[in-house]
Figure: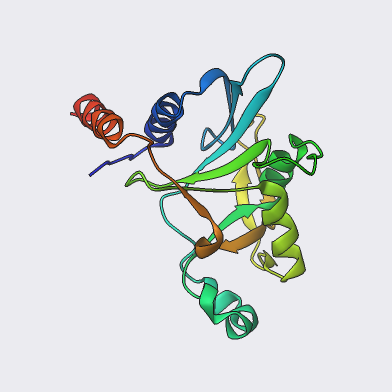
Length: 193
């Protein structure tokens, strides 16, 4: 079994996934203390695909308790969910473009990856619209202190606003070729030994 203990290991695993899918990675940018990555792939003449990769150690386990009205109305989506802070979801959405009617897939995929190598994706626009429409948005009542990004050592108060989506609504990502997946897992294990 894959063991992606850090966001960097998860990024390398995902880059292997992209390579196995025939993608040509052009650029990787990191955000949110190197736990989120914007990956640009060249997809032909002046076209590109974007992946906004989020590394999480676990699902949003208290989804049912936080949103009981939604779970009562849509019991088929009860269970765990995925969540992302408002500013990072808006960043992912900001990279999207209007899609033509004939488009089969979004131009940006919001991908969640977990330590055991599971990967799920959705269109960030749909994530945001659905969460807003179903009132799956919450703002922390308790103020957290977070270190400032300016390396001053000072802290700033934050009230995080997060958007949530049931995991059952996300689409799984899997390696196209199991042998390539197995090789990627073996290589990852060798590097961590």
